[in-house]
Image (cartoon, rainbow, N blue to C red; front, side, top):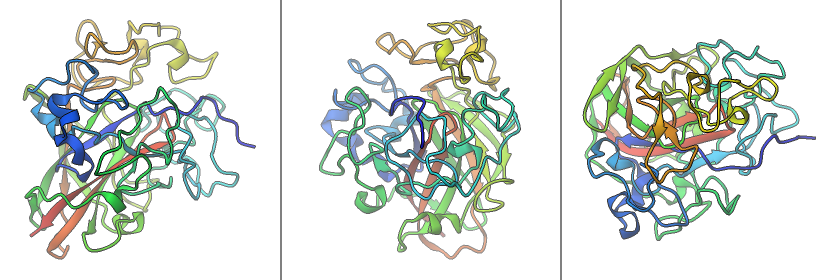
Length: 371
């Protein structure tokens, strides 16, 4: 019998911001104007439900509306399907998983990295990032709200609109949203995504011809390769290039290339430190005040203090640093190589974020033209 560690939560969000995604279809609605959002849901770009998001956040503007609320949950590696219910767990979600964790090096993990792999302390070994691509999804373009039904009354629930309703599948209900993005065959092209709530893990970009069903099988046939150095691009336009961590061993499909999320998770209490009691970090306090709550070293220089509330009206645990935590300060930029042999035509780009702290996978789809 499966036992769950924590109640189901919908507390981790991310979204594709370049190219603009179909999932941000509702960002032009009056309810989401100027970065605001209805009380029934949650914001994708900031935490200030009363004041909305700063207009200057141009780097994240295409991630407005509910772009960050399309995901799958209850998705464990080696299981045939997602439960659509369980976000935070420390067990497998099927009786006979067909895969086990393949990313066991601390340099590739993003949560609880000092726990010996496969031991009781290694509580995240069943979650998607520990074997990238092997966990199932409810839909390759995400499910609205991550469940057919609201899973908790105080969670970030999907706000139903004329475009989509709670539980809708992105590949079925999201219409093409051409943005004029044209990529030449054989070229390196910029892609970017943004975090709202950080669950560690890593991500990949894939392509599927626009005229075909947008399934994992289709997207897995054209995994894009990362090239060059990634960067963090802050909302004020500043940019920092760094050495990314890319993985192509222990991934699915075999040799597919994935990138580790470079933004370390910040935990706001000993109970939320990435290790089960009694192994949690004694340096982590509520509210978080020290480096012991950060899961790994950030790539930019640490600010003083190490982190702060995102906005004055944010929840107590809604915190970030210069490039850590629930990072609303900018976007994560990569470059991917478009295969030189790819036939020209209309395609759908898939961004898939396999989380490590949770049994969740965020997804988005965007329209591009290959010339």
